[in-house]
Length: 98
Length: 121
Length: 111
Image 1 (cartoon, rainbow over the protein chains, first blue to last red):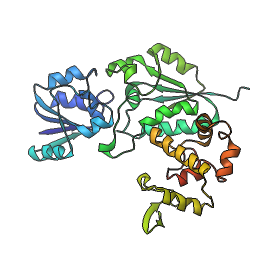
Image 2: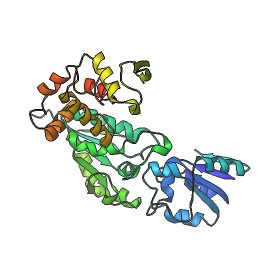
Image 3: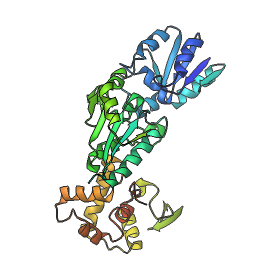
Image 4: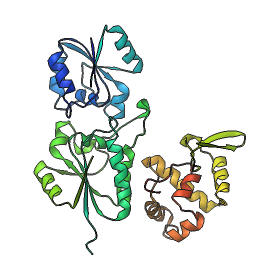
């Protein structure tokens, strides 16, 4: 299953809930959720831990818009819009944690 | 003359994901015309508004981050960033587009107390 | 929405005559808009227009008149950085009118 998060982990519990409830699969971080995988962020350790259970993806244009293209933590794959579409197609279902 | 009031704009939202940051900036630029004592405060995700290197081409929206550098020309020179918010995001002053004064949360609270008008975004 | 036609090319403008697409701007378009505003472009006019374009390039906003006046004074000298001089060049306002000719949006705060 593909989990899509679009809220900053610092101000919204969507990512936190996803990591708590979901057991495995793909997680795609878009819009303000991309901050979760930037180096030095307090959420960094949670994300490193999650990498054992999930494949973590981040939408590159959203990362660039926020000025963090050079601060992506290791172990996260960045995708473009085409990659976003591929993820929705390769997963049998998709959940947007609004 | 005590017509001048102390205005504080509190910015707590990340840019781009919502319209708050841009709206706040526009109100600030308009307020500048009224010669008031204006302070801008960046706490929580609001600190992200000042991050260097924002490139919005890929998301096809206006990159308004260079406008923070224009604030000085508008005589808006009081920019404050909360230390705890900045550090929690792995950022330091060198990561920011403009010169700011970094305040601890207690000092920030005191500064807020001294304002006549506080506008929150 | 409205359109203007310059040298056989059509450019989109808003209802007040400001160019919709920044990238559409060129000197021919500027001259055309100036004519519709009854402004005869001189070297002094271009100096201000070019300054506005550079300002926008750097800050991504059109400066308020007060800010423009101060910045012009800094760059081009005090004899140019004052309202009399700038309103002399652009009677309907160095903000509104000059920005229109420069192909920029109306300055924030101008009603």
